[in-house]
Every structure is written in C-alpha cells, then in structure tokens.
Image (cartoon, rainbow, N blue to C red):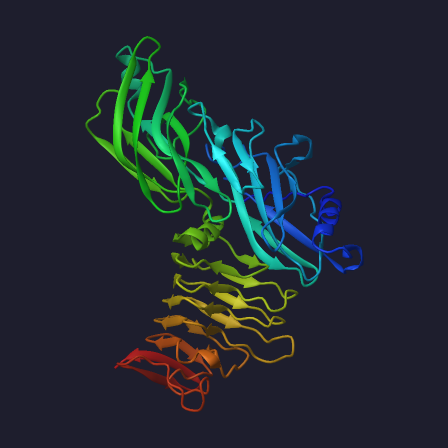
Length: 481
C-alpha cells in the first residue's frame, strides 16, 4: 500500500487567530503541536478507484461546541492542499481545549460542493464514466489537546462504485455493432452529513453519456467495461434500480436492472453477455475496494470482514465503532503499538460493537505503554491468534484482554504466552464486574490459569460450563469435558 501524506501550510497561523474567540488570553495559554498524518488508499495497479484522482485537500477545524473556527475550503481554491506529496503537519492548538476536524479530498474538477460550516457535501455528478468523481473524507472525533501528539487519519470514499461489464464486445463487433457511448439513470442521495455519514435528499440522476472506458481493466476477469459510475450511498447495504443506456453511434439500447445492491466503499459489478444476450445477468458486490490492510480501518468503522496483509504499527488505538460487526483475519501478521505512545491500547471495541478474531497472527501491546492488547466495551470473540501485553512505564505487567462497561469476552482459542508473568491476563474492571463477562472455551495460557486466578480475587474462574483445564507445568490448555 502506498501511503499519501500532506501538510497544512500556515495552519498554525490560521488556528492561532481563530482561537481568540475561544479565550481572550489565548496568546498566554500554553500551546501544543498536534501532527496529523492523513492517508488515502491507493491500489498498486492503475484502475478505476485507485485513489489517485483525488488530488486536492480541504479541511475544517471546529471548537468544543462544534463551531467552525478555521477552514481551507473550496471558496478560496488558492489555499487548497495537494495530497500527492509527503510533508509534515505542524498544528499549534491550545492545550486543554477540545477540537474536531473534517477532511475532504477530491479531484481538481471540483465536482463536490463541500460546506464546512454546515458540515455537508452535495454531490451531483453530470457525466458517466468519470473517475474525477471519486473522493474521500474523514471526520476526526472531538479530542482534547493534552500535549504534543500525533494522530493518523484515514480517509474513505462515501461512494459506491457501480460497474457494468460484458464478455461479448468482440462478438457484438463481429456482428456489426460497435458500442461507443453509455450512461445510466438512477435515484440516489445527493447530500452527505460529514460528521455522522448519513445521506439524504434522494434525486433521480440522469448522467450525460460519455465514451465507453477502454483503458481500464474490469474488476472481474474476462469482462470489459460498458460503464463505471460513483453513487453516493449509506454505510449499510441498500438497493437501487438502474437504467443503463448504451449506443453504437446510431442507435440507443436500454437495459434495466432492479434491486441492485450497493454499499459505501464497495464495488458492485453487473456482468454478463449484455450485448448479444440480456438473459443471464450476474450482480456481485465486491467488498475489496482497497488493499486488505487499509480495509481493516474501513471494516472497523462500517463493518464487514478484513484481512491483515502486512504487519501494522498503530500510533493510537484501532477502534471498532459502536453498532459495527466485523471479522478480522490476522493472516499470520502482527498488530502492535509504538513504545513512545504511553496509555495506548491496540484495539478498543466500543459498546454495541462485535469483533471476531480469526487466524494465526499476533496482537501485542508493547512494553512502555500503560495499555492493553484489547479493551472490550462491546463483544470480543477470540478464535485464534497470539495475544501479548508488555510492561507498563513503571515496569509492571499489564493485562492482555480487559473488559469494562458492558464488555463481553469469549475466548474459544488462541495463545496467551504471558511473557511478563501477569497475574491478570484476562481481567475485568473492578467497578464493572457485575456488567462484564469473560468466558473461556479454549486457548492456551502460560502462567495464568483461567480456571483459578486472582483477577477478581483468589479462585477466579473464567471457564464456561462444560470446560476444564489440562495442566502441563505452567501451561494451561482449555478443553471440553
């Protein structure tokens, strides 16, 4: 995965001026340097949706009350930033104050109307088959500046990509029909809430016809493009009715597809022998719209399955958002956090979310952090993997998996080496013992007996009914009775 970074030039001066509205003595208030690293996905091979068409970056900065205090917006394009180079972001913000941000990246053709004051984007594409309509956005949730820090922000497209492909262009040409242009008509939302991602204001869009794409490779082998379009859609799967019109230069031909599934940041491919026969049509929704490692962040935000494609070092916790159900395949790779970031956990599962962990691989909170490998406020299901926590900044051992709030942890497998001899490999927050759950039905634990430990006092037993422990020295393997 190629990573794209950017710098907000002169941002410090803009924010310093705007912050006078937050406090009259802002000049006397200590400031901290907040660094943002912003990434957009880029596919290794050139194709529609590779992320490279989004070249211009805009942003809005908001105070604790959600009021816009500074922005680089489309109103003054001279201030726009590019995101095809690497630079450094140095942002001076008032220590102790709370901020949120919105980032938006799109093409220089300015096909999206972003209103940072209203926190909305209006999308009304005119032409079919236009890669310039691809765009990316992120909302940075409110955070308090407590000192110098670095935050990584991942931008995602709010669109679905709808592709129509056929395997009989050569046969149609041989029969005397050469397809030259296409367009679609579809009812789709046109307004995006840049904070919560909700879409609204559905409009029946009729695209202008344009040339059939000929320089791109269709996502499904054996097919060639007849059309490619970006639709503004919600995070959850929905359906649209599509009218597809193609032309040979003299005549128009129309096909209609009903109940076509679409979903944000997913590709939907309509394929078949569409020019010589419209009887057999296949519609496939493809979740792999980014490289697998980048897709982890998308899966944690909106749900779905993700596979770790390479080792990943995080600078702040990966958060599975409330209401999201996601499955993570570790795929033999490692997720860990940086030593210099104190109080950093690797993964936090929010209340109402579910994370299932499969496959071989490692999740490790490294020594030097006051953090856990996993914090469960929602539901965590562990079927495989290796889970570790290092020592904290004081040299004390950390818990590996920690349940708090209404968190539920179900361990069906996995390995817990416990290299630092923690007495609390699995642990509950003391104040939340009545509302949290830890049940163990499998796994191998070193130096920690899940059937008899001190996590909630002497003799704590986390085993589910019908399970027992086989002991081999200080290694405890959970098996069914």
